[in-house]
Image (cartoon, rainbow, N blue to C red; front, side, top):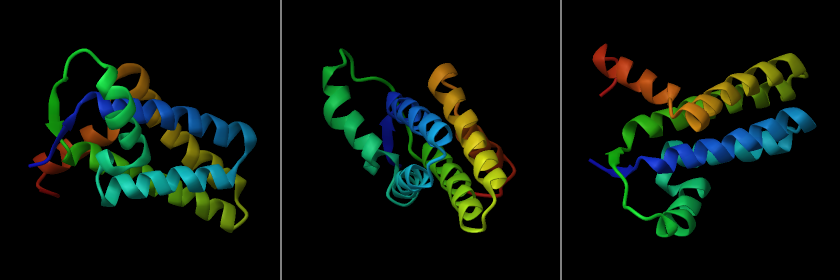
Length: 138
């Protein structure tokens, strides 16, 4: 079972929060496409392989005093999938000419990033645990 530093996903959520605020402020589909690509990498390669994970691992973590707790990579990876889905739905909104769909999907992703960044509550991770308990995923 792959383990990652628990601080990494929160760091990534903080960058995501800023990016999504910029997406909404500038009404920027290209910026949402970039963030969706980051989520895709986190989904399919793991959050530690995403650009934000790389920044944390190589630039931030070496400057921190202690090594930090480790956690199973699966819940944060599932959270990346949830973000990827919201990003994709937002981009579909752009493609079909629905600014409302774009805004709502981005706002949901923003809310989840806010919860993780500010309160250290990973909504996608909690969804993963609920699905595991319900035996919908392993």
